[in-house]
Image: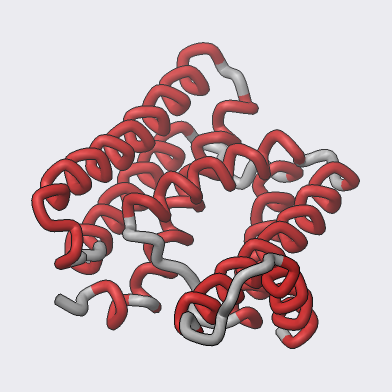
Length: 200
């Protein structure tokens, strides 16, 4: 948006640096600052709303999971600001619904949802996760780290599911559903950004 762009340009101009021969660097700095401002403001709005709706912990769980998954997916995200805002709204609404009404009554359905979300996310990420050529020798370690993150999240979901089933702690069922929702949401974002991710 123009307001973010203008603020980013003013912040970049504060630095006493000769940009005349470095226009590409200047543009890259402006874009980075613009993204930082937009993401920061969006996060403040979302988490303020989460505090008012008393779902701060659930939203924090979602965004930590979503952030880890974005690293696994090579940073795939919505390509324009409007789509980002719509995804934020969708995240807030679904998190509220999951938190306020535990939509899964039976244990078997909770397990099925976990399995389907993990399988769906695994297929999408395996097929479309970024394969950057500029990683060079680091590519192997990058993919191992990414797989470790995905595996950790999957194990955490199942542990939360077992805690819910054996200790009858409903809050852990909500964690399971929110984590599963994060898996699916990131997979959808990755699928929408698949052209950029599959450029070899």
